[in-house]
Length: 452
Image 1: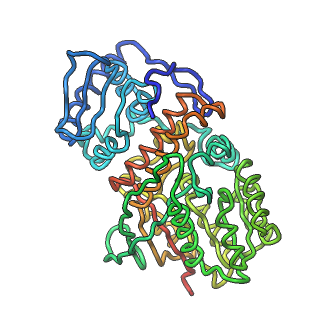
Image 2: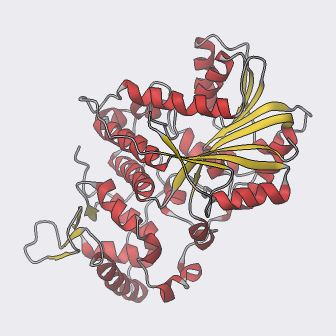
């Protein structure tokens, strides 16, 4: 699919307003610095960057060879990069100032070297130049529903265009071996790594093969196993999604309470649960996790799939203390969490990113180490198992992106525009690159009580 290369920088449905390039001495100086840093970084990478106006014969080629990027409007690119860093990098893609035939492939190369691309003396200035997370994006009780709604209430029809039939919007677990690894930084308890899956495509890019739905089911069933969900188990799910985990838990004979802050997800989840015949076993409520515990109810199993990313660093302790409070004696906790290395988490904490601004307001990724530390310091929970599966998320995202691009006309028919298409293609490819490079990871984490 070819996306429009120069969409007008204006308000787009589902996308915050994109500012035009600012002019003046500060922009000129920051653009010149960005150009030098970008050239120095690219020339150390296995990529190819074509710099020059579209169709120009006087451009230059940078890099050591590899996935290619074309700067159609270099002046705009360096102005945005200089003024707004990685946010500007993403915004210049949104306007079509640059293009890449294999966007995820190109982004994977710098993602693997992210911590060393900028000289260390300049990295120390990060806190002074990186935008801070806006106050209205902090994941407080007052802000959280708006943050969630920004993404998850865009349109159920939109998500159905690129997700598989289970409507699972989280990493799948493909049928591969799981290899135990030795103890080391970031590994706690029984530590397994899922070997990478083989990439596979359905002949029709608008479709997903049955193996993706099977892999999503495998992910959920493993979490239910880890949490000990069987006939008669009382289950709490924090973050409903579109109801697939609740359906599968109810199918085992469990009684499920699921909470969400997405109005659209709640509506469709209830419909799917009822259609599956489990309306009498599942209750879905619009509720912030911080309101749990007020009624004194406890649960044998607490599950949460890729919800901790929206909690915000300042509320991680609240999140785990709440889980500890509502977990019944002898209960188990299983969560799926996107994580980043501890040193990168510390270096980027409290800053705003392109993903925050355009996709997930208030989101921030924890490290496995900080999860272990918080649960040890503030709760009776203990991390007893970990399955890393980052390569499986890279493959999941590759398939979502492929299908999303193939559904261009259907996305436009929902009222979205070319700016939105570019934003979401960049988001999916950027995320795929993060997992493919190992810059970010995803794990299933199991917790039990200290005295069990």
